[in-house]
Image (tube, rainbow, N blue to C red; front, side, top):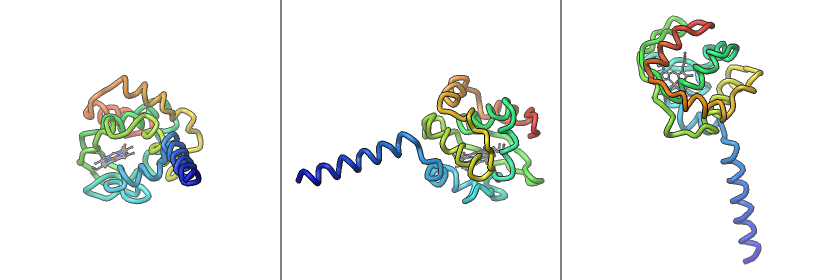
Length: 151
Ligand code: HEC
């Protein structure tokens, strides 16, 4: 009996740890992959590739703000990636995901698929600040058009 209680406590502790540092790969599979596809390679007519695309925005401040913001506000308006036009809606994850989860899923894409080395800026605190700044999906689309690394 005592052993079983101990085992449950150990399990709870393990789950608590996993929640504390959100699992970006699992979050990507659950929330992003249906549209952006496994490996974030995208699918014409559904969602743009993230791999080979968004990493360039991680090199400057406006781009970083855009990357955090697009996940929070979502985006409406057509974009062109690698010569392919996408006109779908990127949903907002402001309600579904916490700041820590958003940081983890973006980290998964940027570090895992885009091999971005400097991600010290990508913290739950920065996501909280971006969340507070707000903005509409349309404004996020306009912001994309003004990015230093190109839209
Ligand atoms: C329902 C489908 C769908 C889901 C789910 C989805 N996206 Fe998107 N995403 C899109 C579409 C469509 C666009 C392009 C929007 C546009 O044309 O304005 C996009 C755009 C993006 C962009 C901007 C790409 C660029 O070239 O600027 C990023 C970053 C992104 N999504 C990340 C994510 C992440 C991270 C998740 C999971 C938390 C996710 N998306 C879930 C459909 C989706």
